[in-house]
Image 1 (cartoon, helix red, strand yellow):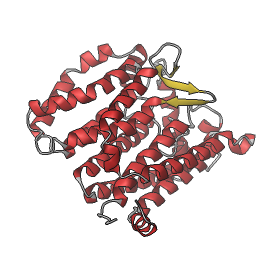
Image 2 (cartoon, one colour; image 1 turned 30 degrees about the vertical axis):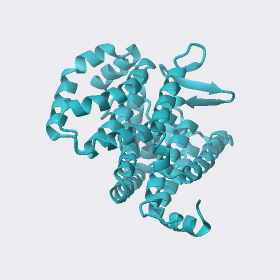
Image 3 (cartoon, helix red, strand yellow; image 1 turned 180 degrees about the horizontal axis):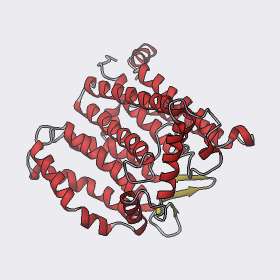
Image 4 (cartoon, helix red, strand yellow; image 1 turned 135 degrees about the vertical axis):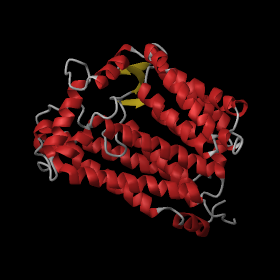
Length: 372
């Protein structure tokens, strides 16, 4: 049982630089969100209140996660695996799942809309890290890797069934990050890349129609007739017109006149570029770099390899989401429905991000053995 003295010892081990960085990103995001939602003009702060409430609930989730040693949670990895699959299956049941943006990945729980795959990111990381831990230093043959692929395959398959390509790629990044950390042979990595490139035509044929359109739109960025290119073109105009200093908060023409679609979530980085300019974008990117580097330090200092894998999984998830979201706003990456962590509007996304942060802090605060 934790005593008051031991609790203080654990709290002192928390990475306060990481916590302060996340608070800075969230506060920065709230300011930008107030402009993206026109709250300053309409006086309607409902989205900001909901975002703030989600953040408070997320803090509560972090506290709850910190109460349990991550190794204790890891003991139930089989149960977490089954629960994760169930959460992905339930949205495919007719009448239960809600379709948003072409993907049936949402559940409506009264007044709340919940994307089950967001929670599954957390449970999958806890479960998959335990499996990968047992294969450390052995990932130099297909015999050792195939069981890990089979273990993860149902998740990717169910996400494709929704179909939610963006989230499926997030899971692939989590898997890749963990396997690389566990010592995946570089020769196998090269072979996997070759196989992936050769398989691209097959993967394209298996995509849903709206996903194919996004790929075609990416290959023809200057053609507004392609669905999805309109928001990218508007995003590029917004960021380009912002220049170095920006047009000023609440003064962006593209965002304030609603030329920029989904500017409160998927394309909120374009609002930053237009209204705060290069300096605002640089600040946001700098905060994210600090955020990722702090997690890298925690991964290296973890007391065991399971803890390292958990942090690497979370870090890989965040790294992809940050790169993907920013990349698609400047037409470097095809558009997918991936939000910008801690900045984009969305309760499910924010809660999940904070819960995963809780996992990282859990590993961090237990990097030293506490005698009870």
